[in-house]
Image 1 (cartoon, rainbow, N blue to C red):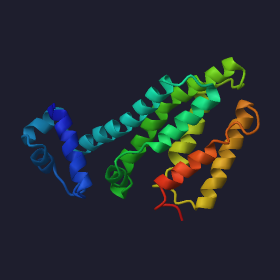
Image 2 (cartoon, one colour):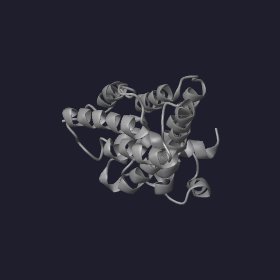
Image 3 (cartoon, one colour):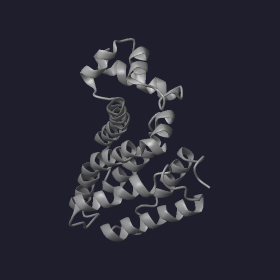
Length: 210
């Protein structure tokens, strides 16, 4: 295992043990079993280590979405369902997720949301283009539309930012279903699978829902 991985693993372990906020670079080095100087070879600060850890955590989710979609031979609507359900079925380690939602880590949390949006947008855009080719959708701007829809998932549906009630969230998922159907000009009920996505969201964020 290389030292960069050891450093990220050490940071994650400190967060899991609720020592992330108070830990120093020296603490991370001690946890990793390496010299403090070795850390500065890879990272300039503790914040940069956390940033890299977040990238690694969310990178695994994105990779998982990509791999599952590559194995799918479904049509565009089926692939969108797979993408959303896979995303909500995946999650970063709970302690890391909680740590990101602490006030002092707002900047890194915002960067993580941007990372997800920028990584998933090309995937969703390619699926929408597939739907255009299949005659299931009629979308002139797949890239822009993908970014707009994913901003809803990444920001409005972030349970660390908003504490919507279960009823409010259910209404938002129904609204999103209608927006997708009307904007893509797909048959009514095409995005009914979002009810399943809502169930997954509820399980993942049940402590946050009022």
